[in-house]
Image (cartoon, rainbow, N blue to C red; front, side, top):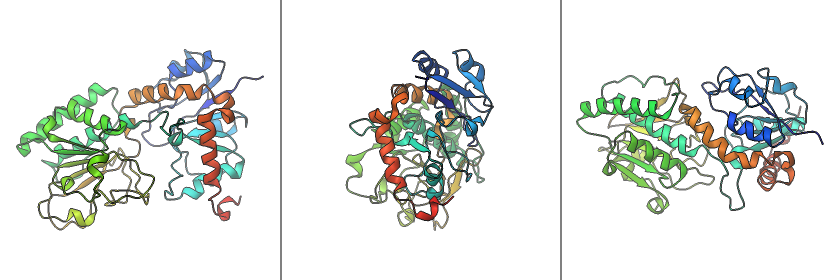
Length: 372
């Protein structure tokens, strides 16, 4: 039987430097009998030569489109918004299962071409737990950025400037510490931060970043399900300087904060980092903004506030790309046991569950979306 070919595509999302496969995981897959084709990439954090050194075949950028139908296309973030039907099995985050804006067009490309989406966001084990997630590094990067934005606000009225990814965590932490020190001198105090979802992967990453930046424990309010059980909105959020939302929702609960709760005269809140960044999702517990932000424009102001300080929201949906090397290594390591079963994905429980979900979501598409 011919070996299974995995084709790692180059990412096209602006400032996305992460990779679903790393040289280490590619080496393991090759050792297990897979053929790994890696598109040359000017943006990936790992050099092409690192993949070639472990036996991967380097191929042209964007060549996945013309790859044989049986090749499995592995990527990370969503494909560019094009209209041509998709014929391959695609392993990636597609952001089209929660009725995000334009979801029908994104999802319909797969059935229109006879292709399949195995969405990385919904790869779960038999207990329903995700097998791999970027949550920790998303929380870490989000909290770090939130501290930088707060520090910036202490001496600037103009929006926080664009940021670029860091070569490693130490470089990011050093930058945040410096900014926080300057901001605290201006403000005469350190900020108070509330993290909701503090016990999960994402929340633990956020708390870790706050600690490494030098914030004392008494300045970090760590909330999880027990604290939010009474239902929001929560005054503790507007009493804090920074709110980091690490909750990922698939159904509606009472909002943590809303426009009405922000109108209190004693509001201190000036930075919200919505790590989940489900900007257009009807389930968001933070319905105070509608714009997804980007690394070159990291914040969006909340409009219509009657009093209190200006409020900036960070809603970047690929925050871990601020730390692309560590984030990719951790994610790909956790994903590897599942990747090793892709040669029989229809009978592998993790992939079979993802395929079943894909079929269920396709069944909800309007007929008009399926017309070629």
